[in-house]
Amino acid sequence: MRSISLFSALAAASAVQAGTVQTRQTKITPVTAKGNAFYVGDQRFYVRGVDYQPGGSSANLDPLADADICRPDIEKFKKLGINVIRVYSTDNSKDHSTCMNLLADAGIYVVLDANNPLYSINREKPAPSYNAEYLQSVFATIDEFGKYDNTMAFFSGNEVIHDLVETTRAARFVKAVTRDMRQYIRTRFNRPILVGYSAADVQENRMQTAAYFNCGTEDERSDFFAFNDYSWCTSDFITSGWDKKVQNFTDYGLPIFLSEYGCIQNKRDFGEIAALMSPNMTSVYSGGLMYEYTYEENKFGIVTIADKAQKGPRTELDEFDAFAKAMSNFPAPTGSGGASATTHSVPCPTKDKHWDVDSTLLPAMPEGAKKYLTDGAGKGPGLNGPGSQNSGPPEVEDAAPGSGAVAGGGNKQNAATKGRMDNAPLLVSGAVLMVTLLGAIAL
Ligand SMILES: *[C@@H]1O[C@H](CO)[C@@H](O)[C@H](O)[C@H]1NC(C)=O
Ligand SMILES: *[C@@H]1O[C@H](CO)[C@@H](O)[C@H](O)[C@H]1NC(C)=O
Image (cartoon, rainbow, N blue to C red; front, side, top):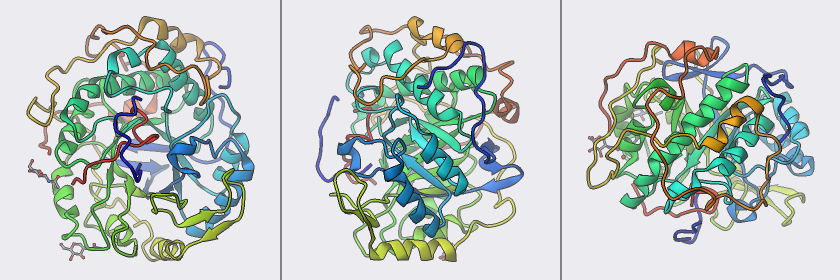
């Protein structure tokens, strides 16, 4: 998430019954991952969406908990023709049925950040922030949203790793969280819900980050990789350097999409969509999310909302129309788009001046969190709980790879990803990235 100012180092449920799986509450076919692409049924699925956080990161407001907020926006989403929204801030102590059902009725899936400013991995001091209270909040978010079939995916972290090499040391913790979330979903739900990391737009470590989240044992890997990309400034496929990224991510082995795209240096024409939907990219990328829907201080949005409570009239800016046109001119291609049918891992990145991680071992799930796997997470603390960033011990033990074993999980995702093999090379503009309140939530 883009903020206008540099917030340097801002350090900063519905009850689940034991042993049961969640019931489905909406009538929309869930999105699955197979090979390096997403599917709805047999049809390849492309993310054609927007990032949606009315009030911006600083408001830290859950737009899906209040129909007076989401309802008018869902009407706009229909007009835009989008199929996915990403929401950074959700409150796991609240009910989301009205907004989630309205979204499902509109054919719209959601991708959610499982963290929030108080419950997140702290990139400066990751070990104490990885603890049972934290995971309880993450799991409560999964419980609250996993029951809706239009919940496509969760982000296990957003921009935790940054342009400073020190921040790469937090990668082990975010990967452990990814593992724990996937294990929780396998254990508690009767359908796969995808989990992956949303990486910052940092050239120096993007490829290493991508490799890191797709290396090691099956239980430790992600279901997809997503990154933020602000390099297409009303230019073209070559000038933006997107051609090189496609080359570098070829044969990555997992689905990839842009969790944020957008550059406002020149008047936006959203040419990114033409490229994302073209054969130049579809064999490697599965679409992306335009940053962003509401116009905030950082000036990226396409709709203004009149009031602070985010319930007032919505006004479409010129870019709204430009975005809607690009969406209708460049529909999702039919057929496979050149996707590969098999998934595989890649070698773990080695330590260098941009990547300060020398162990492939991950921290073990905190003892106190294991009970959630059998009992469910219980009620979530919401966005205003006591917080968890300093609740854990200063050091964490490592886990044996494979200890969050996937065998017998009964999750179709596992069947689909069986037989992964290692191989493949890898590789990452970066403007100095803004730490964002919500974005990095990992702060
Ligand atoms: C696809 O790539 C070619 C260069 O190989 C470029 O000329 C063309 O504009 C690209 N298409 C899109 C839709 O970006
Ligand atoms: C692509 O990979 C090469 C080799 O690893 C690297 O030098 C380059 O920076 C990467 N380019 C992009 C755009 O990621």
